[in-house]
Length: 225
Image (cartoon, rainbow, N blue to C red; front, side):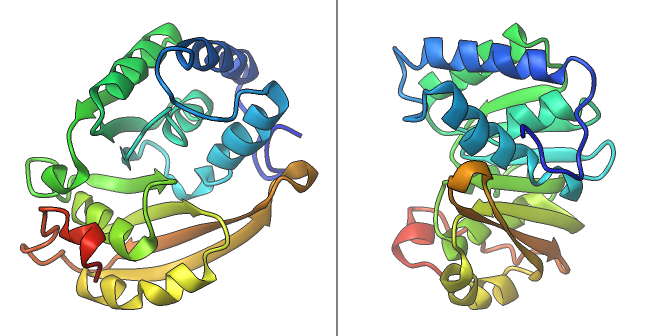
């Protein structure tokens, strides 16, 4: 089972995803992008999980991903949802080079890669420009909200891909309130083949994020809200 039952991929998507696997595992030999290199685990733990959140991306959404790394969930989402426009924010230049290469190899348009720290992006021209922000395996929710909330338009969504997230969601309640966000869904699901429990923590932007956030200088991690 490559996708959740509520989603049917477009023609050609599986071929592109197979090509993505080849591109990433080949590149992974020179730049550490993922520890998951077996085909079955790759499709279960990376692809299936990435596409699980696609319903939170409205048709034609202008989306941003924070901490793109190997391109999860952004590139699988883009392969399966050509209507989406993606900006990928990644602080490591070597990973940015991979993301640009992969997008070109896969023939993906409307994918922009930005070599920048998330806290810098949230204070610059990208602030409150996006319909949806997503992040996976980046930081705990209270830190992640401070990185991501500033990028989202009022009325837009932040989709955090997490494991078991109950503790983090409770821990992030103060950050949620301070940053103008509201938890609207904590969707739990299990990856196929007993590969693990997952949660999609979805927040709606209800008010502009105060100008002082993100604070920068590493405070988001060292002194989380």
